[in-house]
Length: 351
Ligand SMILES: *[C@@H]1O[C@H](CO)[C@@H](O)[C@H](O)[C@H]1NC(C)=O
Ligand SMILES: *[C@@H]1O[C@H](CO)[C@@H](O)[C@H](O)[C@H]1NC(C)=O
Ligand SMILES: *[C@@H]1O[C@H](CO)[C@@H](O)[C@H](O)[C@H]1NC(C)=O
Ligand SMILES: *[C@@H]1O[C@H](CO)[C@@H](O)[C@H](O)[C@H]1NC(C)=O
Ligand SMILES: *[C@@H]1O[C@H](CO)[C@@H](O)[C@H](O)[C@H]1NC(C)=O
Ligand SMILES: *[C@@H]1O[C@H](CO)[C@@H](O)[C@H](O)[C@H]1NC(C)=O
Image 1: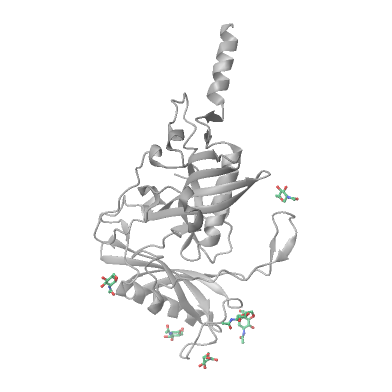
Image 2: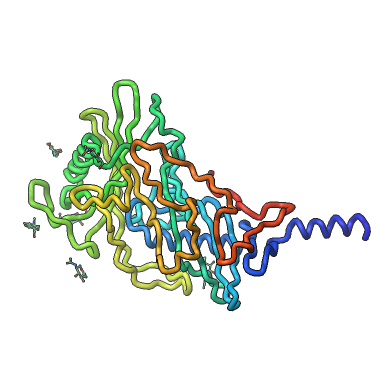
């Protein structure tokens, strides 16, 4: 073999998109089109199940493998990192067009283990398990830093209601009610703290203020999302009212099909309907586990356990070696070879 072909062969080995590690587990490349496709299916599925807070966008594929069961059937396991976007779940903007929230805003990061099936090249999510927590880097109080404050903070709640009143007063012939607080934040600036509130709103049956207003039926009501900020009595608000889509594009045919009724939020962070299991004190958690009946396939390690350490305990950054992720009934198949070039993690999409 001459040098050139030896180099070419080495190149092929290095470029190989998979490596056989045992009779049942195959490590797959996190940068292949197949991995990308599976990850986007996972992203969309998880967003579809997530009916509170913000949409999440794929940032990185951490791990991708195929498990072949003794009966010959195959299942795929993927570990993805998702980042919080600025689009509320009720916002009809597609995830790909939603700006990802910068880490400096204490964005929430989601880590999900996903089990997928592949039927004739089409991936479907079988189960998933997520952990989500805010970026802790700017947790310390410092001048100019923004930090999240609890959903039940009285001053921030007052900002939300005062700013919504301001908005309702401007809209003239419709009145919106607070539906869900997305995030509350505070910034230390010279002259005192500045508060920020982001919240979802729903149209009520009232046309003006000073009436007893009740939210309209979710299927027909208009929804919106507001960004408010206030320092003392100085309050500013900007609300975006979402168009109620009557038709959407069917991705399979590119034809117009009737839109499904908008997602109905299942979490209210305002008022008596608070549900601590699905939102933390300061952020909306991703659904922790979906379809527990197949959760045996999902890691039982600390990898995706919900961290319920708030508000006093520090948030623990995930740092679990891949080898701790149990993926098959046969632990012997977990021995990973020394790879010449790492297959994973895949490329980082945002930061
Ligand atoms: C906010 O909620 C936390 C945890 O439930 C509670 O300890 C705290 O007293 C609440 N604060 C207010 C202002 O209601
Ligand atoms: C609504 O707007 C009117 C006129 O701009 C103002 O006089 C009134 O105080 C406002 N009400 C509230 C609740 O902001
Ligand atoms: C309310 O506002 C909408 C949009 O601005 C307008 O189409 C509608 O005619 C208004 N209704 C009334 C009763 O003023
Ligand atoms: C809105 O609905 C509530 C409950 O049905 C009713 O009490 C209230 O009068 C209604 N308001 C208007 C302006 O129709
Ligand atoms: C909302 O509207 C839908 C469709 O018109 C109807 O099926 C549903 O019962 C309504 N819900 C309520 C609470 O009125
Ligand atoms: C639908 O449109 C997209 C983008 O315009 C295109 O990539 C895709 O091939 C189209 N699909 C069909 C089935 O026509």
